[in-house]
Image (cartoon, rainbow, N blue to C red; front, side, top):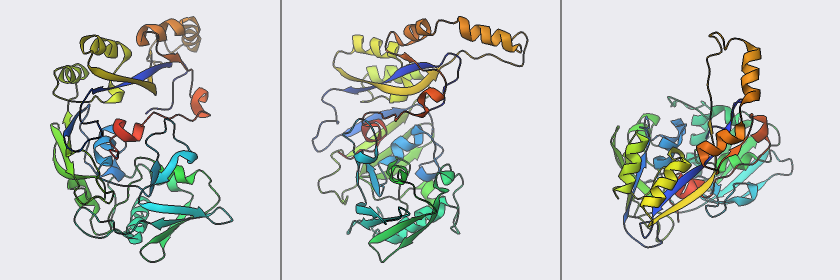
Length: 349
């Protein structure tokens, strides 16, 4: 999500997720969840991805050390729960965070998961490994991380240069997946191997992505689904029609508007609709290099003369809010209900 809003006409729109009632979302074994994606991800190497169109299908393949509780609407330090790590603790100085790892976890190719894999993952993101990521969007997020060390196969410690109490939130985010040491970055782009509830099956660019249930998942009886199929549909109207026709079970939350929700809801009373806060702004954009808009006084006059409330109410049909400028949101904790569950593809019921 974009967190910066332009000072002029930053319309705060609510986002929508839709699911078909009695679909594979029910807590029963079996079924294939069908979802559409609005764009083609470059690959499924989650450490090299930067948007939800890659994160959503890739998250089900991997696990984190820790994650945000999928049933808590807003993410926080208090909502972090174990994943591949069973427990964690700080040293007295607040500069060393040690994780006790889960035993008996296997990668999708049958190799055992160990602390060495955690070290390799952050060496890769820090660009300290012989192997290299083609893109490394989150390298700067770990500027305060000095090193990661392993004590045996079941314990790993993150060494920070200075105290950073919110550091666990970086590790709990959707892009903080653990990679296997024995698989190269190139192989992960073509055929990702994880420890997650779903195994990679196939990726046909601009067509589809298919995942299947991991029968050896370390959580007994999970996942409930037999698989997930993502259909890539770049046109929003076509995607909406695909949902209405029953060809997919769930929409992508960030591609819908309130008017589209109302249209679908009126035509599909059997659909379950969820309206949750988001931060996708709507703008009026002008070319400040071209006359007469190169005049700052004119631009200021435009900004002062526009009825922002009417702008927001019309676009969002009364469901949006006017939030002006990045400073208005910088101090807020923004969470999206179950964002890293169904909304973002971490399907771990």
